Length: 209
Image 1 (cartoon, rainbow, N blue to C red):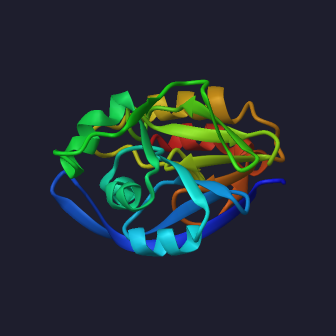
Image 2: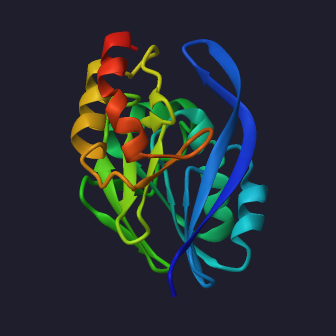
């Protein structure tokens, strides 16, 4: 059975460097009728668990460790028995939100997370955060970019743990090399494609943020 992709939008707050902002997050569920993976368990474990339903949740994959992408991960894991995955370079950010609960396992560039017909290849794409990752499934023709690439440009790099030249390198070398028709499913907002964003790289560099 071919995997399908579902989106749940949850609302809450993003907090970093002493500031707090209201945000809506895309939570992605990938799998079939029997098992699934959640990408970025944001804000509302109950809403995410309801969307997963009676499927076996095998993994909760964190694209990075800003609080708005991980704040519901431990509760969802406790409820479902799923493994929480994070890249080790984002552990300092993770501990700001969950000082007493570490991730269950650490993502490695190039590894493949399988569930319900999906094969999600981990692409380490630092810049928005040191351990930011994207998840590419060539069979589904999608890449889940977290806050690395949005419709209209790269994720924000004006706060702690972020770096604009690094995110540009990640996008140029890891994402814009994907097939142009690849759907870009983001951590916030609307989807786009690699082909729609690629022509604007020089503009983003000129903007410098």
